[in-house]
Every structure is written in structure tokens, then in C-alpha cells.
Amino acid sequence: MNENNPTKARMSERARPLILVVDDEPKNVQLLTDLLESRNYAVCSAADGEQGLALARDRLPDVVLLDVMMPGLNGVEVCRRLKDERKTEMIPVLLVTALNAREDRLAGINAGANDFITKPIDLGDLVLRVRNAAATKKLHDQVGSQLRQLQELESARDTLTHMIVHDLRSPLTGLQGYLDLIGIVANGNAEVVEYASEAQLIAGRLTEMVSQVLDVSRLEAGQMPVSLRETDLVALLPAAVASLGPPPGEISVAYDLPEPPVRLMCDPDLISRVMVNLVGNAYKFTPTGGQVRVGLAAEDDRVRLTVTDNGPGIPAEFRGLIFQKFGQAPLGRSAGVRSSGLGLAFCKLAVEAHRGKIGIEGAEHGGARFWVELFHPVAQG
Amino acid sequence: MVASSRQRILVVDDDPGIRNVLQVGLGKAGYEVVLACDGAEALRLWQAQRADLVITDLHMPAKNGLEVILELLAHSPEARIIVMSDGGQTQQIELLGDARLLGAILTIKKPFRLVEMMSLVSRALKWVD
Image (cartoon, rainbow over all chains, first blue to last red; front, side, top):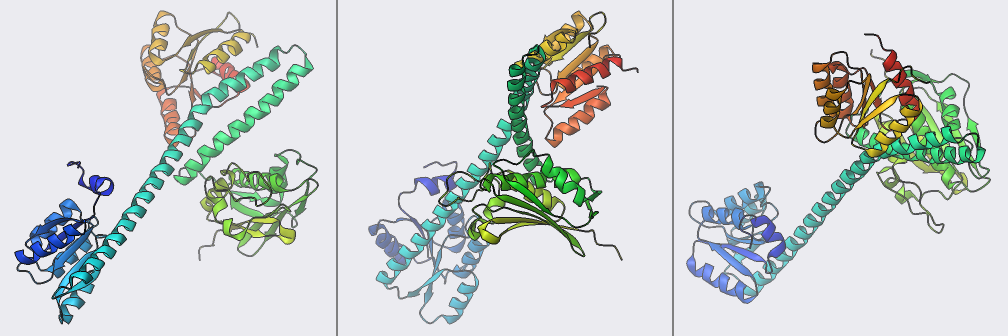
């Protein structure tokens, strides 16, 4: 056992569940120790409440068998203290009470005891209750350690992503610089100029992806400056969509826009990028010859932006997931992936930085409709 | 964009891609380019021969960009400096602000395009205190 870290030793190295028996009657301690050891449990024991508490904190047993009637700190009090401490609160406590001690039982339940054993002790009954308590504890430990593993993985993933992305910026600058130089020295060779500029576009996309990862980190940390300006959304939306270039695969874009202007206090840069992401996402999942509809509706206290595609749609159970970082909805029968998983996370964070809402709903003919609601600032009265 | 009488530019970055592309790009524009791969080397080169302009990265081993700026300006208050940063992270944006306060005259965030750097360089060299 690792003496420096009893908690870790307990979790990973303990082969047999450890039962702590606390009883001021040495005869009882001996009886219970023999019985439990014969059932392949490890047993430690204490002769009073204080000692029991100290031992529980130190050894972190899997089950505590606690006699209620003890001089000094009684069983109910020991139980209450165990349940009050984060380190020991999840250890099942079995209180051993006299048969008709109703008051003890109520006090025990109040103190958080998990189960009761009545005196005179029925050994068969005790073994079953201890077994169940140990099983519950084991499940609890498993869930806890899986959760910790997941949290560690998630944090490692974020750190790694951030590190990679961070380190990509210098090489990208070098790469784009050389592509520019190739264009400069091409000496009128149209083919070389064309290939260099194609490669430059691809490098530009990489740069975009890098910015996206960093923007998501900054938005998550609340470090993204949001500069609000009065903006006409009727003008902003088509300009944002146009910045994506022509749609792929003969997809057409249709607009449902009200008469200009529809003014809103927002960060035009962030909202443009939200639109670019939503429309770019719609392009990816709209079949050849399909249509993407971009809508804007002004209501009393808010504006509602919509981007509707006639792609495969997103099943209701995945609609919450796709706004999470790296979240993707499976595409059912059709193969492929929905996105890098960051664009929509960016949208959600950017919209929330405006105190707005974002969501997705099913559209007619099975497509997906993303909507964004942005609110006018409430006039102070 | 050919510079008169070959102005000297000291480029300081631990990333060889950036050093080399700036050497070629600025060289084609007519500048004489000297390369350093960290702050300590940059200061040694500066002591040996002054440059008309220093372009430095912020995050480097063996003296970072801020130390370079501080020591350069302590010796030569007239030094013109362009700072390149990895940008993105808040601390680095603040660092850029610090760099400006300390006397670096222009800043640029990575990744940048060669043309952006070229126009920054000609602005810096035309700078009048």
C-alpha cells in the first residue's frame, strides 16, 4: 500500500472491501471481525466514537458498522460527522441499534445512516446488508473514478488542442509567406500563379480554423471583447453570406428579409461570423441543387435570424449536443461528418456573449433550421 | 519598393520558417536582413552592428521579446522595433500593449501575410519621432 496516499491506494489497490467496525464491546468486535473475515472482507476496528472517526478518515473504509450506544461520541454523532465531511460522506454507514430503539433510528436517519442492523444481531442478515452496502460503495467508486478520468481527458484534450493551434501560427505565417513569394517570382507563369493562389486559399482556411479554436477558448474564458454597435442586419446578412463565396454544388440561397433597416445593437463582426458558420454548415449538408434559406424577422423586443437547409436534418436527441465543442450528430445512413465541431460551438458562445439564444428545429421536408434570437436592450425606466 | 542605401533589418524569431521567409521577402524588397534565433543572439548582433529596424517575436528561449525591447531601448532609445505576437490569448494581447508602452512602435499578430509585414516595415522606416 502506498502510505503517502491512502485515498489512491484505497481506490486502486484494495483487493478486498474494508469494513470498519466501531463498538465499545470487545466481544462484539471480535465476533463481527471473525465473521466478516471469514466472508473475505478486510476488517479494522475501533473501541469508541472518536477512534472510529479518526480511523474512518485515515483508512477510508468501504462500509462502517457503527454501534449506536457508546460512551463519549455515540454512533449517531459519528455518523453525522462522517456524512458532513466530503472525504467520508459517500461511505455507507450501517447503524447497529437495539430492536425497539425508535428514537435511535429516527436520529440515525436524520444523521444520514444508510441502513440499520438490530440487536440481537442476526448474522445472516448482517452479512447480506454489508454485502449490499459494499456493492453500492464499489459502484460509487467506479463512477467517481470514471468521472475523474473523463475530466482529465477533457482537460488534456483542450490543452493539447490549444497548444497545437497556438504552435501552428508561426508555421502558417511562414507557409503563407512562401506562397506569396512563389506568386511574386512566378514571372508571369499563369499556372504557377494559379496554384500558388489555390494553395494560399487553403492556407487561409487553416488560418480560419486556428482562429476559431482560439476564439472558442477566449469566449469560454469570457475574454472575447464584444464591441456593440448599431447594425443594420438586413445589410449585414447577405454581406456575411457573400463572404463565403459562391455556394457549392449548385445550391441556391434564398432570403426572407424584411424592409431595411432592421437595427440592432450587436458586434457586427461576431454576428457576421455566426452567419458564416451557420450558412457554411448548411452548405455542407444541403444536397446538390438544394436550397438554403436565410431569414430575418423583427419582433417587438428581439430579432430572429434563421438558416434553413433541406439536408438530412438532425434528430431531436442530438440537437443539444451539436452546439458543444467537438459535438457532432451522426448522419444516420448517409456517411460523413457534420463539421469540425467548433463552428457551432463558436456560434453558441458568440450568441450567448450577446445574451441571445441559439437553437435548432426541424424544418419542412426534413431539413434543419438553425435560429438565433438577439434581444434589444431593455430601456431603463 | 527598393530601399535606398540598403537599410538593415534585424529579424528575431525562434521559428526558422518565419526567419527565412522574412529574409527572402525583405531581401527582395531591397533590405539587408540579419537573422537571430533568440533574444540573446539579437542583442549580440545589435551590439556588433546597429540596424535601422528590429522585427522581433515575443515568445522565445534565451531572452524573450520584451527583454529584447527593454535592453535595446536602454542602449539605443532611437531603435525602431516591430513586435510579432502569437496573438489570440489575452495575456499576449496585454503583452503587446506592454510592448507598445515600452517603446516598440508597431505590432503585428501572427499569422500575418507578407504584404502586411512589408507595409508595416516601410511605415516603421518612415517613422519620425
